[in-house]
Amino acid sequence: MTAFVTLDIAGSGLHVSRFWLDTISHNLSNVNTVRPGDEEPFRAQMVIAREKVSAVGGPGRGVEVAAVMRRPGDPARVYDPQHPEADEQGYVTMPHVDLAGQMADLILATRSYQINVQVLQDAREAYQTALRIGQR
Image (tube, rainbow, N blue to C red; front, side, top):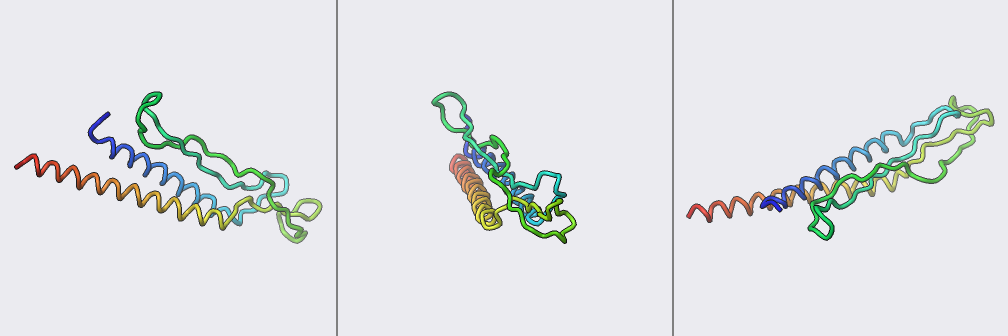
């Protein structure tokens, strides 16, 4: 274990938080994307994170993106025969994005990013204090 493990862990948290924010941004940018009736509708992506471990039973080494999954479930079909992307029966398959859920995730991901930045700043301050003490 390195002396700067705190930086490694917080850095991995920043990476996962940024990836999560990017994924949410992608989902939000497609909240109104309607595809032709014969194409699969847009489904929101979900980031799955997991703990990084150095060895079985060893200390944690941060987090990493384990997978990116599509939101399960059936998207809504809306009857709108005038819509240019309606199928033969006049239905439009709407994107499968929960706007309220994405906004809640956005708050969580932003807060996660902020906390990891704060950990990095606190660790830097602690290391600088230790260096000053060592110089006396």
